[in-house]
Amino acid sequence: MLDLICIADTAFYRLSKSILIGPNTPKEEFTEGLLSEPDVNEGISIGYTCTWQDGDSPVYDTVLGTLIGDLFKRMAYEDQTIRPMAEYYTLGSLDTGGISKPHLWYPEMLSENVLKRLRDKGTEEGSWSEWSINT
Image 1 (spheres, rainbow, N blue to C red):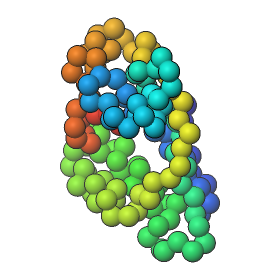
Image 2: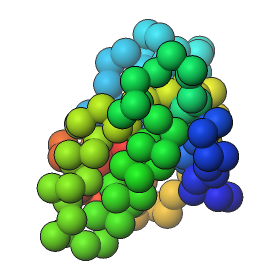
Image 3: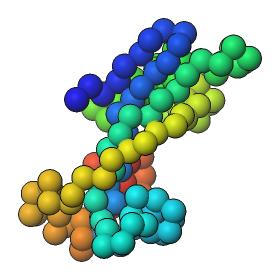
């Protein structure tokens, strides 16, 4: 599965993942989100988020800006020295979000140890934690 796809000046697709297991799962997921279906109380949300170029967008609100922000964020997981720049790109309107239709995977896709840890302690706050809700 590709992490990202960019068609310059047209659209940018990035793989988005959210861990919806454990006590820190956002309450909105149970009322409005993927966990609002009957008999579904946990899972792993995976899907592509699409950002596209609108002809009326300001110069900083671009597909390439979103690509640069996403690349910096991905590299910053490995190299802590570029995290301030990644946060700048993410918070500075280069990353404009997008729309997504994620798919919910069964939690049993994870190992027993990881699943037990998530069910007991949940995810952690903070963008750079390997146990963060969004990876």
